[in-house]
Image (cartoon, rainbow, N blue to C red; front, side):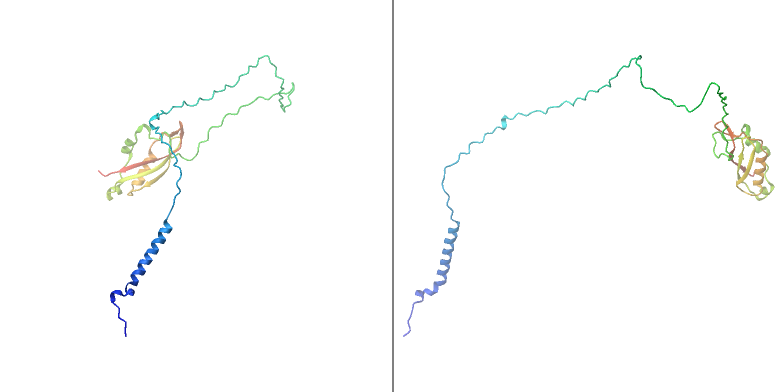
Length: 222
């Protein structure tokens, strides 16, 4: 005969719930056991009262310190030596010249200072340049310059540049054409310059010297 039980009286039905309650209770007891702390009661310590003394503080102004005094300058001691004091130190002077009473001294002859040698090369720049006498260069050109016929026929006009040397006596030499326009103008410019009288030489430190000059002669058709 099969035994019959009521479903409400079956204990296995709630076994999982009882197991969870048991585990939760055991874990709670274990946690409380580990976290349980016990302190021993003792006498209280009197830490006293903190006094507030900030109001009693006085602001101290900064003090200015005077600069340090410089050390006194020690003057060297001057010791006066009387004029009558004799110096025992002997000074020996050795002169390797044999002079006797019979020795004749030759008369000293002073040679004149040689004149400063003047370089033969012409000066390119001098303090006082050479110039045509009486500043009459323009009048001299007007009276002596002739326009070449070949340049007139070819209609050539312009300026011829010449370089030359004026020596210390005012004579002209080493005439060269530095700018040419042709048509016989170069030759005419050289001819007129050679025909000019002596120039006033240039001076360096007040002394007449040889100097190099440059001049321009213009040719224009009227």
